[in-house]
Length: 125
Image 1 (cartoon, rainbow, N blue to C red):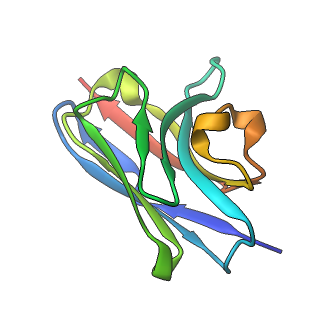
Image 2 (image 1 turned 180 degrees about the vertical axis):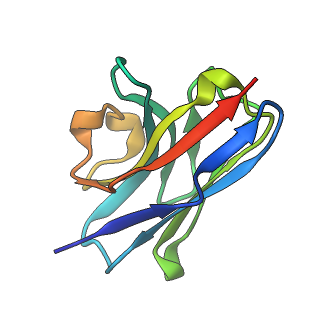
Image 3 (image 1 turned 180 degrees about the horizontal axis):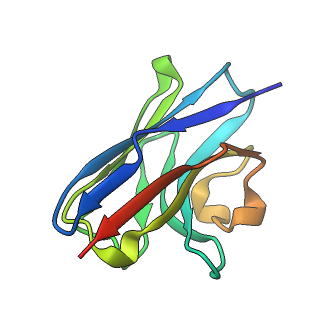
């Protein structure tokens, strides 16, 4: 059973930084796209950033210029560097893996098969 384990969340003040990591327990056959999502209380889960196997990235408008997604395929690890954090970035952050199709062919939560348990990010003003 594939497991994705996120880490690196925490509480920071506005303007601070955090680096999230997501480690896969094993190689995911057919893995084609990885992404970070977040969910604030009472809100729907939303996409934050995605990365294809070829390194192509995409970001939500709200995080462009502040967040950077990256991966180390050999280590089966996904990262999210978050800078200049804002209170509206608060939420549970999840990593997810999609099989067979690239990110550009769909980046909704329903397009991703494997999910981590989430790591909490809290940004205070």
